[in-house]
Length: 257
Image 1 (cartoon, rainbow, N blue to C red):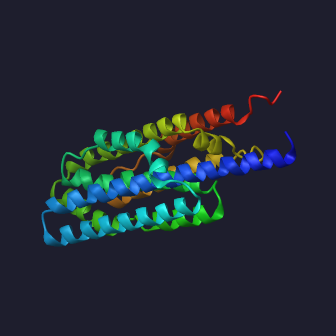
Image 2: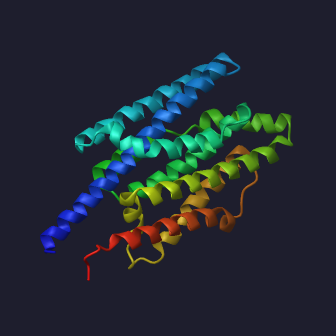
């Protein structure tokens, strides 16, 4: 294959990975809109109803912006989202909150951890897509709403902290499982994450550390037990290493001999 052909193939793979990322995020934003709208309808107080409704509207706005970028890349938005519907729906079905507090923790810890993972992928795509993804994710922080309510609940009933800590760990575990499933099924994403720079052996380790640190900060902000850094990063490390190994296995063309 000529150098021009290799470059064209690389650009096509990069574009396919960007479309996958945008499709996954767009459906995630749409799912958040549905979930927060439902939560707003059953919120106990009017201020909570208003806050959750505003969050839902913001997520729908993110969805529209992501669809706009997909259209700029000449991708069909519905086709881009469809591969991720089953995995994301399965995540939400397996992490259905048992009560209001679990719903709050899911909105903050679960969505926050997923956002960190999306940022990790965004670092590897084209600058325009990366900028949009980072703008969208920066506007999904629910800390001002969630943190005081969870802390107040823990003060009123201290044993609830243990239950919510276990719930937060389950959320992260389920999220990692779905990420691995998606990467196994989506070759562009697996190749993207499998094509790390071998000249920077510490880059992946720093990536894991950032994920673990951000998760620990969220747990601490809620007043929940902070996981040890090594334990918190091990799950993310295993997931990304699995994805990277799959991607590297796919990155070599069949006629490369």
